[in-house]
Image 1: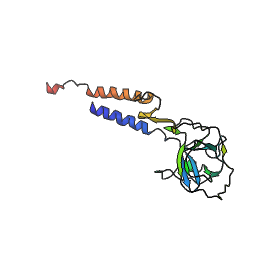
Image 2 (image 1 turned 30 degrees about the horizontal axis):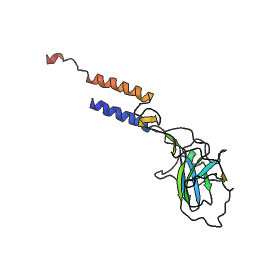
Image 3 (image 1 turned 90 degrees about the vertical axis):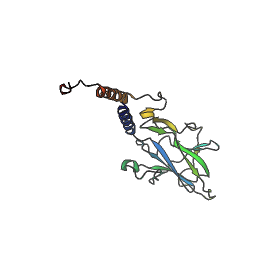
Image 4 (image 1 turned 60 degrees about the vertical axis):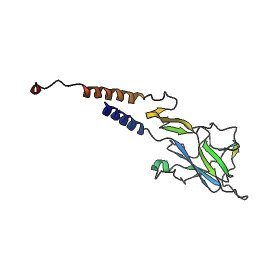
Length: 200
């Protein structure tokens, strides 16, 4: 029976790993500029009608940045390359950003998809802002508030494929059926066989 349970854990873990990667943002500071790239998002590249927001963590001030797009896409840590369809999507370029820590995310949050979706990405800008810094795009405009709180995830999937908010430890329907099938197979393996006639 121990062998069976090991097989079950391995199988359910394999199914969980098949869930698509999360939809995230990656923000990179380059001097007083920030490049914000959506990763693994369906057609939601720069520009978007509702725009990209920048929220200052210290003051909470939220601005809509200009729809200034760039083809430069810094890769997130640990990512060697992106699929061509994703690599071709434009990122946002936020210019003349004062020093501080910021959150960047779409004004219309991402839908829950794949193995999770983020509200925002955080980035630290440490370079001093030059007095003569000039933007090629329009200046950011204030908005009432950001559509997120302190948690970075719209949704996140874990516990062998179940979404946050589901009962912890519960198996999704497809995995539950597989578990029952394996259980029946394991019990069949353990059923004692009648002795052969040669042993009588």
